[in-house]
Length: 231
Image: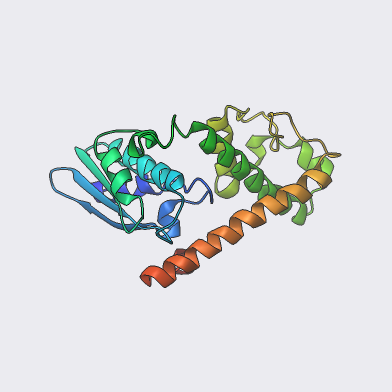
């Protein structure tokens, strides 16, 4: 695989923290250039100039980290385009600073708590899709509650659930329960109806916001919907 393809693959591992979708799938990677010397420039574009600065910073910083870990990459430059705090965020990234360094005196600390909050929401939404697919396939609540992670498919929502559980420090081994509550305890068959009703709302919220962002990006830049392209 070429260095350019490996860089693009790395960008595919960077998720919008609010939507829990890869920035490449959302169309947020406007351009990516790789020189023969291993110098990479990534240009990110967001649906509106007013996208929340904390989310914008997280995506840009995560992109810089992900690409920087690719063997053969010597230097990474990530530029956030057409954003009302782009100059501040770009300057902080260029000097290896944190979010607070982009806005001195306006905010303190890192964004770890915000990242964890949205990872927890994403896990609820992904588990809701996994659970619904199992029930739609004929499984009973008792069967679903008894499943282990090893019983789930290796890709899609199930794979993302494993990743999120690992990132959140929740049980994520093959013999751990397929579906867990926020504290990591296994969901029981009796828990599923109420839990799933609430979880569906979280999933619907993420899907709706994702669709809105794609539409806004299309209007702003005229780029095709990446989901339609993939289909």
